[in-house]
Length: 350
View 1 (tube, helix red, strand yellow):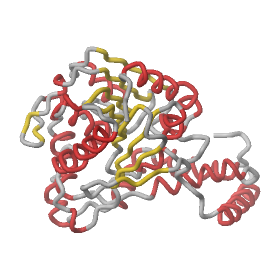
View 2 (view 1 turned 30 degrees about the vertical axis):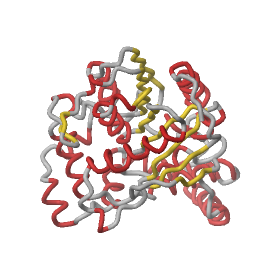
View 3 (view 1 turned 30 degrees about the horizontal axis):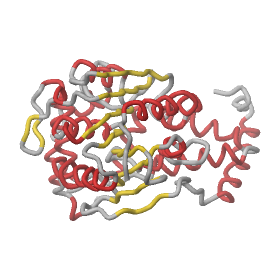
């Protein structure tokens, strides 16, 4: 914690916090989504966006179901999507939106067959190619691994960021919480899983850092509008979470956390066994050293399961969100990923 925070002077701390909160109200609403996007036709319930020129190397981003994807495009200074577009990548993003009561029976199989596969159809048709590169983020990376295992002939390259594969590592706090939960009974009572409950769960994993420390450091921002806006954007994202489709949530907790299906070899989706060894293309797996949601061991397990003949791994310092918004990631990681994508992709014709 910064030495500038006057913890030994409560009145000064209160004054600084009051000034910051007044300024925060004046700066609202903050803008997110700095990179221009085009909404494309898509037959599923998700929205398919395209960023950048249609002439670049196509890349489909599959994001987590439990958060909103604009963490990848929070601001011009810290935009994963912007960095990829500037590097000559045509970025496509599936935005899952906000599941409603009618979506409670949506399955993981539906996300793969009706959303991801249809998006791949659209992208390959637009770029006159048979395969597309995929970047999966967190839970979206797990779905991307499953898709690459089931439809290996459709995936050119695979990038996984902060992606859990082994869901029962010793450091995995989420596993210890859900391993004995009767998740079916929960969703029978609730239908969809409320976002507010998941937000409380995630905050409870690191309560001091995400509550006490985070808001005490807010006092430091009383005279720094740029830093305060960055704080507000991240705050907006953290609590802008969709409810979870009930059946898909049950599947994910039961088959990945409780059964550890990818590691055990027991995972079944879309009527098939999901075996990551089927994907033999280039694979770049990235994880963070201090990730409390996806411990390094949970992500590194992919190396022993994939059939990739060109597997590459990168470790970044910091926590989960640092992979997307830290200076280090934007200085080192994303230029490397852009170069790797170009090297591993054949020329793409419109």
